[in-house]
Length: 476
Image (cartoon, rainbow, N blue to C red):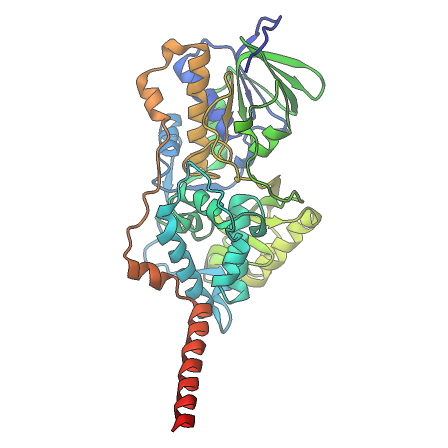
């Protein structure tokens, strides 16, 4: 593609669009390598952090190595969540209640294990688009019998991929899961939150990032609408018509937002969306934070780990007397999130849950992760974001950090190639994260046994035996 020469002298070395975790990580990495660069960050939100938020905790497993290295660099404490000795507190999941709870959890465990055993066949670095592949909705309904187990998986698919299970096929979902180490790891991070997992304070992390970037100007409530690529610089135009010119631009934003921008010249075909899905209203995710005078859930015998399948609400203890969580909902349900959360928690943890000393919430759209990870820059335009550019830990904090570091190295290679070492290039090389589980043919066969096919083949065999006996008796 032939680019034209511009008439402007770029005022910035690097411009970062998006002040989420990926964009802030890029800024920190760039300044750590070359602090003389003229760097600026712009964001359409009123405060930096993006989906990281400023309240509550985020959970990190040991496989998110980029995230752990960043925490050490920022001197942010990663706390190992260890349960107090002698204390046995239960989780509060609606999957654990009811006459059929044991059967619901049994078929869920078998289904999750089956997917994990098949995960080795899929790669987080590519998306397969074979024909006649069932959607996740159809796959779930074919393997799970109970309504609650189906709804749990529907919620998980939509939370992780950003689209309903009817709009993502089985191969696409498995490619996403393989980037995080399997479906069991995703369930641990989003729902189980085991005590062996590490957690980090969102506020502490954001404060440490902002301290590293105190010399960088961060413009808030600035929306980018156009990106014009010249041979020796990039011009970015905001919704108010103000242009910004830079030698390199990092678009640290979800890929569906990138595709909404006007590009001149147009984006090459390799960056355009390859999947065809119905466009519809996206679900929202509201994160909530509540502070009480004491831990009311502990007095009821619960650890605070809460899950309600419908409506979909997840909660956990942040600190003693502090409670956090999130609710996935439609746009029409936004006004009733607080009331819904209060009602559910009051029902299980007591009337006191309706009267917190402090309540905060933050609502955002779910990120869509249906695109192939965008790791190759478009000359001076570079991509970043957990959902759009990560090859490992997609839609997790580790993925945001990984893509932010890769974007920073790519930008430095454009504006200051002499400061980029071979170690930097090696650090951002694509790696297959999930090697999978080796399994025998018998293990694979048994993992596919479920209530549906067991009942079908049982009826088939019994019917066949009956017909043979009937035919034999008639002939005799």
